[in-house]
Amino acid sequence: MQAHHAVQGLCAVAALTLCACAAAPALPPHPLETAANAIADAEDARAADYAPAEMRTAREKLEAARALLRLATPGLADPNAAKERWLAEEASADAALAEARAQDIRTQSAVRELQAAPVAPPPADAPAPNGG
Amino acid sequence: MNPQLQYLLRGCAFAVLAALAACGHDAVRDPAALRVRVELDRLQADPQLASRAPQALKEAQEAVAAAEVPQNDPALSAHLIYLADRKVQTARSLAEAHVAEDQLKMLQGK
Image (cartoon, rainbow over all chains, first blue to last red; front, side):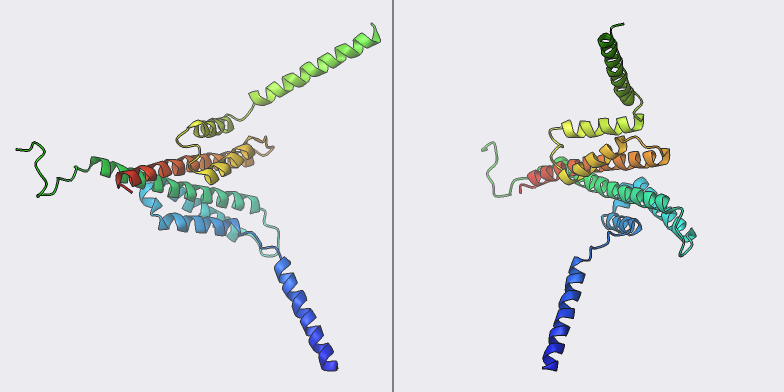
């Protein structure tokens, strides 16, 4: 009987733990992390080849935000927290713009190439257009 | 003076002042925020692009609305305007890229 109660108790604890886990809100990613991911995505899309200025600005701003974070004293409120967040948000926006520009420029140049390509000649066994 | 007339005149004066204040608010709107708004309006009015990048356009609209809210901190204001400008440009580039993708598919005969 005691064992029965113990099992019931354990089940209740397990159920409560699961509920607590499910109810815990997921923390939003830190803006620095978001910016680093946005820059990595843009690099994967070779955005630096098409929008180098935006990519350079994005990297510089992320680095500046990281430098400010390094100045913070552990355990104390960070006086530069807002500046760090702004820099990281701007770095994300720069990287997203670079990636979008790269996609735009790449696709438009593919369109131009196809439009400029000479029309393929007809197959050798096709009848001549003038019939003679 | 007739007290009723006095009240009426006061009411009119208040209404005129309120209207002038409302006009003044537009007049002193940050020119950079105004420029971003104009860019967003141009994108939304473009029949070829307006519907091509809906998520990016929504983010641009939200960013422009945030940039238009007057701020006490000029640095915050500049930050919000920068974000809005970048998001409007991103929405335009994505929309143009989607139009070009459609052209590419057509040229490739897909």
